[in-house]
Image 1: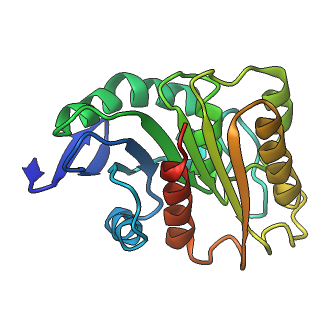
Image 2: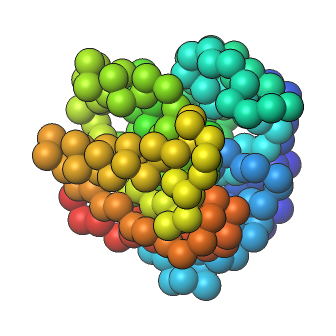
Length: 230
């Protein structure tokens, strides 16, 4: 259903909100945490982001669809991650993305993948499994994920990827949880690693913990990513 410069799709159990640019422009895919798509779109407009279309995918099964391989619970009372990212990525690129682009008034100039927390991890992982995305935004990404650095070192990222934005709260690594504690070290390593491999990359440190100003952090990442001239 289209209304003005917005459209809504229902596909594969996902509700997708699309905020359309009025011209040919990049398409940014964002996996929402709790239906915050409209707030993110408004935050990007307030920042004066270059023209772009935003597709917000709601209804994500986080511990399955955003995780690359199974891991046990990382804390008492937590649930395990089942590692269904590959299966979901097949749906995203083969079914959801074609429907999203068909709903736009103009074909996108390029596609970018963005996300917060586990969706920030998924954004980076997806670039190893598909050539669909040329720019990535990982804000407070779950880059503590066990064995993820080994995966990065041992596999080639898509040659289509030209720009990556990383950010993290400066308190996120201050935890006694052995799984989460390496998140800043890992994120800084990845930013340097991709930069050394010829990808335009930045790491930004934000004040606060994992939950502070998540929408603002995402908007800042999208803005920086869009502004890069490649």
